[in-house]
Image (tube, rainbow, N blue to C red; front, side, top):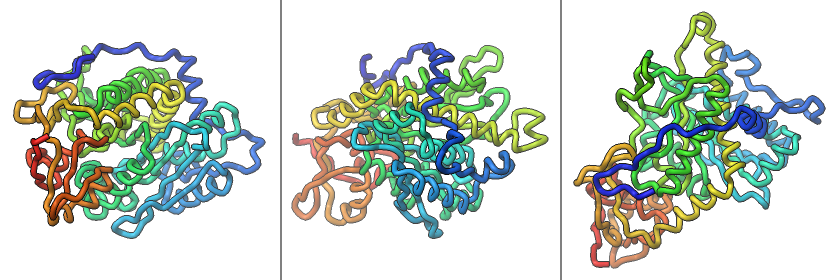
Length: 438
């Protein structure tokens, strides 16, 4: 595939044939296991499961479940990686990842506090993987490390709000890193270098144009390495959507409203290439990205009469998507590793353009393209002091330069750096002085 030129977005092929039904069942068996009756310890149940979906798992129940999984299995570890504005812990769960593991998958669950279904899917998946005894799951976990932030926004969850305690949307903060929650996520991505990141959300339907059971999307930012972009799209179109359809869930591309008669696209209202959204930031940091959005509102009379019915449906659809992700990670392990490794290495030799706007389905405008990017950016001591922590969290390196620092583009973060330091970038952290004397 030819990389898009200044005025031409990537062209996408039509719908890709999915996996067979048998393959989907096998994929789900790897991830969504049922603990055997002969297990040495009875696996804990979430509050959601105990109530048959009538209520969501409480924070105390989450803490108890994670502690039980940690005690039960030597392949599970729970760490506190941050603290919210209201003093709640941000916990990271590690599952698997022994000495032979060469692939890391990160799940970021419920960045928005009023979108709880993804969190429930993550909690039950943690439990299922921790207590699994079947050979297939054990083999999967011997070569794959699963990292999970089961509650990425504890303050929002407690308040039932989209934002955190300060009213900030965490999923619009993955460039500025003003929130403790986004900073913790950035540190995990920097330090653990996951090859795949799934971001679990929910949405409100607009029938009949936008009302699928679960919407999915890949990173659309034009600065994403082509190999990472294409591997992410493959995850969506060859694994996740077919698995959902096989499980009798309707699925579509996030942000795209469709004609209820023809199924053709009418307009796109979300799902762009904006770099501050985790789905896109993920790819700029060399990981495959997957956004999932389950339908939160009722879709039938039965769900309106009994909210637990709809809540169970929401969690099931999220679990199917997780199973498909794990199937992809297992089946295409080497392809994923190659794509992400080459993406990281490309920054040292890449001389191509950097895009300040546009998306893979929308050409960047002439004023949104750095056709000949600078060699780097100089920051005064004062400007550097203002952003040094954020640059470090983004994995950007610098060197002393007179009274300030110099940030070269010749590093893995090449295509991210202008978005952070160029005055023309929409969400830049500070105004760096572009160095064009390469």
